[in-house]
Image 1: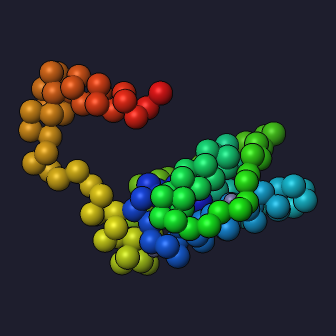
Image 2: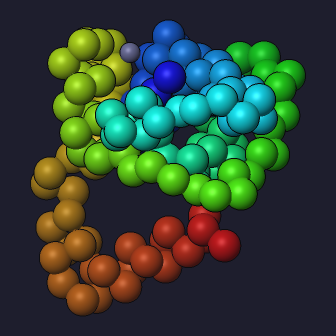
Length: 135
Ligand SMILES: [Zn+2]
Ligand SMILES: [Zn+2]
């Protein structure tokens, strides 16, 4: 079981659905009171993020038209674990070219931030744009 925790929009079908199924497996394991120490030690799981991560994956799956019939509102009583997301991204891209291509395709082009993120005015403008999507 592994929570990649990378941007779901940059994940191929296999890895997106795979992480989703593994989230449900993880919750099943926790609910049965079984140990996930090996996954925690391996830096593969952050149980504080289970519910939010499931919501993010569900949104991406819905956008792509995948069927989703498995609500998950689990909150771990005693959250534990840490995932290094940058390392996770490197690992994922090393093993899956499709994820890598998708991820690169959704990045903002490097020449985009001239006058955008570079100046205070640009930054404020960017924040106001993002504010429309973030409540
Ligand atoms: Zn689900
Ligand atoms: Zn992939």
